[in-house]
Image (tube, rainbow, N blue to C red; front, side, top):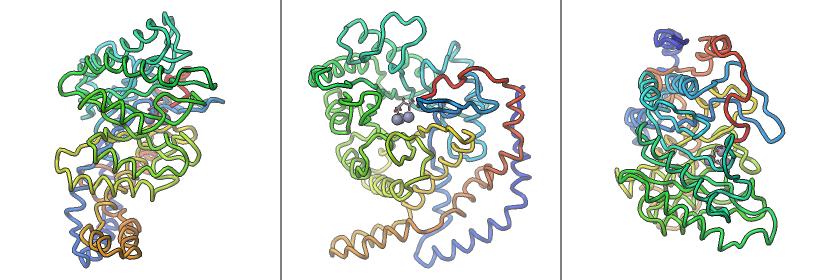
Length: 431
Ligand code: AOS
Ligand code: ZN
Ligand code: ZN
Ligand code: ZN
């Protein structure tokens, strides 16, 4: 049996913190009550929030220059689940894991499911990987996968995606996320229309293999590794493809996959309006697809995205259920700490957006009172909801002070002993 932080340890860590938390919570409660907001209802709502962790995020990432492995890194999918289970144990906000094949080698789905059950973890969308060649692969993805000029390469890439669906079925997933790096690096390299035609043709075959209750999430990205024309570069292309494919195809928004200054919340509003928002890969960035921790650079953007999502929830009702996933690369931090912190920052944006006085906002909008409309949003964003987040975690059995609880548990040191270093354990330096 490998080391797990005991629930008793978490509770005893909470003991010395609960009184302070209660008084902060009460103070915020009376402040919110003056504006007609019930802190208990908000705390329950926070407890219901969930975002999936990426299995690849449990290992130290890297850049195209180098990867500096951390100690006690997970060496296989079971160990990645252990780390993701620990993230959920302490954060109580990440009950599912998003797997990536073939980085996650699954020889016995039943055994893996049992392991996940032991952590009370479920499986979110599964991800295919046709942006790398696998050892001994018959064909090469150097010039593209689902859009390659060669039918043999496209067939291989389609077959891999169908295998991902099969594996996902055995694990209880309900969606396949497809991101391809396909595109061109030079003008003239590709016939722009031809490449997209081939993409659609391949995706149609994958779509055919989806079970009735599954969806396929199309993930667009502006550039990298193709630096001139990426085939699925923007939400417009993604949307057009999703429309062509059918109801089960939707568009996934990774926060790092847009041109600088793009208004992502507007993309979200558009996709919601036309029923095509699949969900998110949350992360943050300054320059490009930096895959930094969620909320670490631009928390206001995250809030504004959730402002659209809360609006959508009110308009669409319970049928509105986008998939929330983290997609980050942890190069210089302990991945468990980053994942816990990010999950809570996404939850924070969700709670802050839930605080927006929507009747008031609508009235200010109707009367063109721009200043007061903007201030209505800012007031919600500037509310420090930390006591709500901490209380939600505490009531769900998590840790009030996650990072210190994790550090004091000695989890990483235990893992350093249990998991002696192996080469490139996380499967890839690039996430
Ligand atoms: C790539 O930039 C994308 O964000 C994909 O979601 C990718 O599959 C994932 O980041 C793992 O590399
Ligand atoms: Zn992504
Ligand atoms: Zn990315
Ligand atoms: Zn990524």
